[in-house]
Length: 490
Image (cartoon, rainbow, N blue to C red):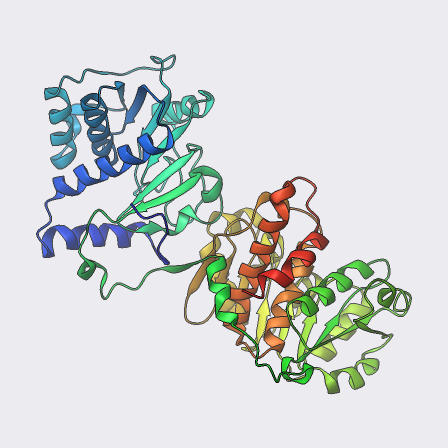
C-alpha cells in the first residue's frame, strides 16, 4: 500500500477502463483484484485501529459490496468479531461479488439486514456504493448512510465514501464521513476537491499489483499537487541581484481597504520578487510604508497616474481591495491595455465578469462566488462540478484559472491540477490577497503562468499548514507571511 500518493488522478470511467485492461488485456482475474482490494482495506484497518476487536461491514449490491465480503471473511479468519449488514437483495449479486459473498458464507458468515441499532462494533466498513454513483442517494441506502454518520464510530471507506461523486467531489444527497479511504487501482479526482476531503479523511492508495502497462496511453484526468512540487524553485545563483527577480506592481485598495494591497504586496516580496510597488488610493498611501517599508507605495487618483509605475513593472497583481466603483473600474481598464502579465483577483474578477475579455498571459484566481459571476450562474452549480467550472472559465477567458476552495483546481489550456494542501483555517479574510501576491511574485521571477499558478497555490497551502500547527481556528492571512519565506526556500 502506497504511503506516498501518486500524482495521477482519474475519473471513474477511466478507472473502470484500467480495471478492464487488467482483466482482459493482462489476464488478471477479476476475483483476484477483488481479493486484493479486500486485503488492502483490511490491512489498513488493522494498522489504523490495532485495538479493534469488533468490525461492522455494510455491503452494497455491487462490486464495492464484494470487497466488503472479502474484508468480513478476512476479519473472521483473524479471530475478530464481525457482522455484515446486507443492503439490497443478495440474490441480485453477480459475478465476483456473488463469489465473494459465497466464500464468506462458506467461512461461517451469517448476514443480516435492517436499520440501526446494529450489533456493537469498534470500526465500521463502508462498502455500500462504489464509483459509479451519479444520482442522489435516497431510501434505504440513504438511511444507512445517515446511520453510519450518526453512529459516532470510525469508518473505513472502500475505494470511495458512499454518496460522494467520484469525479466532482460533490455529495449526492448525503455521503459517508470516513476517517480513512482506501482508494484502489487509480486515485479519483473527486477525493481531493469539493466535499471530497471532508468525506474521505486520510486517503491511502493501493494499485492492487496491476501491471504498469495497464496505465500506458491513458492520460490522467488531472494531476495531484502537494508541497513537494515547490522543490522546483531550486536555489538562486550566488551572483543574483534584485533586477533578476522582477518588479511586481500591486493595484488596489480603494478607500477603507488598504489591508488587501498590503497583504498582496508583502506576499509578493516574501515569495522572492526583486521589487514590489503598490498603487493604491491616495487617502491611505502614506500609511502602508509604515507597516512594511520595503513596499514602494504610490497614491493614484486617475489612470494617468499609473503610467510611470507601469513603465517599471514586469508583472501586475490587480484586484485586492479594488472595489467596483468608478476609481477601480477606470484603473482596471488602463491595466488591461498593457502587455504585462497579470494576476487578477477579487473585484478585478467581478469587473471582468461585467466587461468580458480574454488573454493568454494572465492568471485568474476566483473563489466559487466570483467563478459563478464569471460564468453567469449560481455558486452551487460551480461547487457541484469544480473541475468543469474551472475548465469553462479557462476556455472563456484564457490564461490560467485558479478556482480556490477545498482542493483548489488549477486549469490551463493543457490540463488540470488539484492542490491537496491547505486546511479549514484558511476560511478567513485576506487569504486570497496573499495568494495573489505569491503568484505574482513567482511570475516576476520568470516562471510561466502555469508554473507560477501551480507552485503559488501549493506554497500558499503549505504556508497555511505550517501556520496552522498552532491551531486552525483564528488563523490569519498575515500568519502565512511569516511562514512563506521558509516555504519558498526548499
